[in-house]
Amino acid sequence: MEEMNGAEVLVKCLEDLGVRHIFGYTGAAILPVFHALRDSGIEIIINSNEQSAAFSAAGYSRSSNEVGVAIVTSGPAITNTLTSVADAYGDSIPLLVFAGQVPEHKIGTDSFQHINVKGIFGEAAKKVIQLSNDDDVEAIVKDAYYFATSGKPGPVVIDFPMDKQQKVHEYRGINVMRFKESYHDDRHLCEDQCADFFRLLQRSKRPLLYLGGGLNSEAGSRAIREFNEHFNIPSVNTLMAKGVIDGREELNLGMLGMFGTPYANMLIQENDFFFAIGVRWDDRVAEKVGFAIGTDIAYIDINPEKMHQIKIERGPKFTFIGDSATAIRDLLDYAKKHNITPDIREWQERARFLKRSWPLDYNRESGYIQSAEVLNLLAKYIDNNTLITTGVGNHQMLAAQYLPMQRAKSFMTSGSFGTMGFSMPTAIGVQYANPDARVIAIDGDGSLRMNLGELHTIASLNLPVRILLLNNRSDGMVQNLQDVAYQGFRTGTERMKDVCFADIAASFGFGYATRIKDRSKLKDAMEAFLDAEGPCFLEICTDHEEVLYPKVPAGGAYKDMILGPYIRQVTEELYEEIQDKTGTWAMI
Image (cartoon, rainbow, N blue to C red; front, side):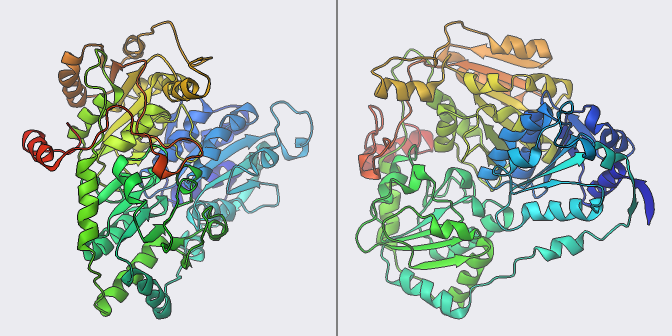
């Protein structure tokens, strides 16, 4: 045993847990912890504000197998992280946030920068802990790390009073495996459960996989890819599962939902067996489903609450509460043991036909660059080492539609909470977790402004983060909604002054910072942007009037999908001609 103060115990715990980076912002009520960090091997990254620090820590988690850690001070510092914590909670992202707090005897008073952390974060975090002088800091911190990753992952917020940081404790060096093993989930499907599942699958002629964020891990992605090497079932995915199956696979039809791909939204209307794995039945997807009579539904998820929240007319005929990767492997082992290989060749061809017949497209006659055009171009350069973060808005949905991500944890976006300002700070955490990867932060001008200070963080740390800004001088998605709902009255969504963000990036110290408006310069600028070293910023001025398609209107079903004026059916002859010229179905 060693004697040390509470702040030093915290730092020792983080070292024992293998933490290599923390993101944060210092202040008086957390100074003992920052002082203790100076003698550790843990690198401290100081963001421009506390919200960004927690976003960076969550980006670290989203793109790796580690748990991101944010450390901030009291009062407004911890409340600044509330949005990031709620965002992580909505997307089931493990995260640890430590906050300084006034001394314990001043909690509940009007002391300077005191806030009731437990009361404020109670519904926005997986767990909130207020340390007191009698608590075992070491056991609580080590347990919290693995609790954040267990079951339905999520953020844990730990309130650390100043006197608790300073008080002398005994540090015992408890083996972290004790805590990790306590959360081990060993639930498996039994033979009878597997038999029940395959009775449904074998009577199906048109099965469809619906892949969710619960599979967005190396283990989950590997399991579902091996499963589908055996079965070759067409698949669609949620926003959070992009990359779980390689986006270039011909039977992967991409994102389903309000702004899903045309072919995904068409195929779901024809399936007779809907196998949902690790999804949360988001209202932008589930409320638009009108399953055909006789469609069977199977559902696997680790969160038992989701079994009672399925907002569809008929509930599942097969359910399992447990780890998705484990369940998928159990099913595959059973299928191999019993030689189960359904014949769905006609359905597979139907999926291929829809994918090549209804490609994404955009206004190619406009004098202005289209955001869809930019992302269609970027799609050519996506490889296995490319990691994407996005803001929230039209650019986010277009990135989800167009970019063929090739592996799990390669597409980081705010799904459940839809948080603007997400992209840049998240990209910082992604870059630290993946130092050899090519990290591209895609943003709109509205989202970029929310955490503009992270330009300074990226430049001052000389991070090779590439920021692709699609600047349409408006909040494009909300503007599109206004045009429909309010007869074109655009209150609060347009920005009349044209600000050159590339100049701002250059002033912060970006070595490459370029702005273009001319379509003829687009390809060369994109290649220069991707080839440059260090912090890079490419601002592309896009069409102020561009509308995101396809879309399923609010309250509508998939059969009501609006394709817009540019997406149209492509004949087999024209498809072959396009393949010969471009090598990709997405460019016509």
